[in-house]
Image (tube, rainbow, N blue to C red; front, side, top):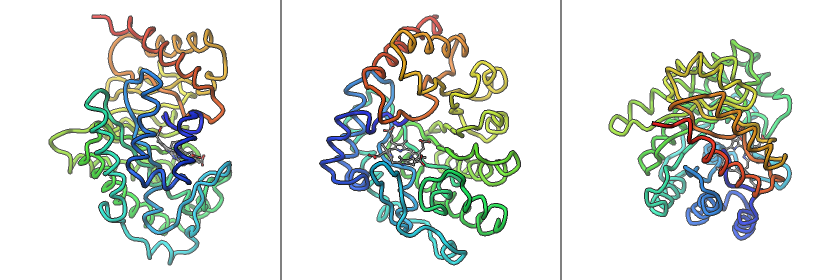
Length: 330
Ligand code: 1CP
């Protein structure tokens, strides 16, 4: 999860060369370069496309910039029902073709050595940024709309679901081997609202991917940050794997849904602030909690922070490889 990024000096150098974050995303050669950087440094088992979940609203005309130390910001956030009615699904070639171009380039460079993970944000998570205009603490505008103008929100989520389905299908057509849906803000919702405003739309996307992707059956991973309470519902969404944040007991998760779906996760990223011995101990605990056999994709429970020492990530990757071997014996 977020393998590339500001914790790597080589990423910061390429970002500086690009000038700004969106140019980095929109220049396939540079996106390819930063996708491959973590693989050159660490013995990773997969690559994740370098892009962002907010490319879709940018292509819808909201004008995205990623401001140093402030995060993503939209020049034209959604402010009225009219703004929502005027939105259309972007064209995957003319508006977002740079993402497919990057995928094709990365696939060529990877030469089949490791699989490439494509991704998109969930409709709800993308919608929060479009409504708030950027990151948020309380999600007051997005939640205000959820309770006060729910038809407007449903209209937006429906449109985003179609755009995300096309977007992931375009990534699959360009060659990604797995797709992941990031529902980073699903966990801020009530039980009922999660089901109605987040999971229902992710289910639609999964159906849309299955319908288009009959031959290859590209696996779909669904990650809801803070979604541990709802994993049984998530497992019934049609996804192949559930991404777990660090708050969930992966042993319990396996007991309840392990027969239906694979599990990805879920080391607390903050473990990377501790010593190599502690990192190894915590890796061993996650592996033991999942236990023997297939169906576990080791991952961090969330993205790597900019102030994490890359050498600590190397300790983590090597520990996973070494300590997971006994779990796959025979
Ligand atoms: O791992 C990789 O190399 C893949 C690249 C990647 C991915 C998978 C980036 C690059 N962003 C994402 C997904 C993403 N983007 C998510 C879902 C995962 C998660 O929960 O973290 C979200 C919520 C975003 C939105 C976003 N874009 C944020 C988070 C803001 C917030 O509200 O907390 C940020 C900081 C960005 C910009 C961004 N995207 C990616 C990077 C490396 C950065 C930082 C860029 C920089 O300053 O150079």
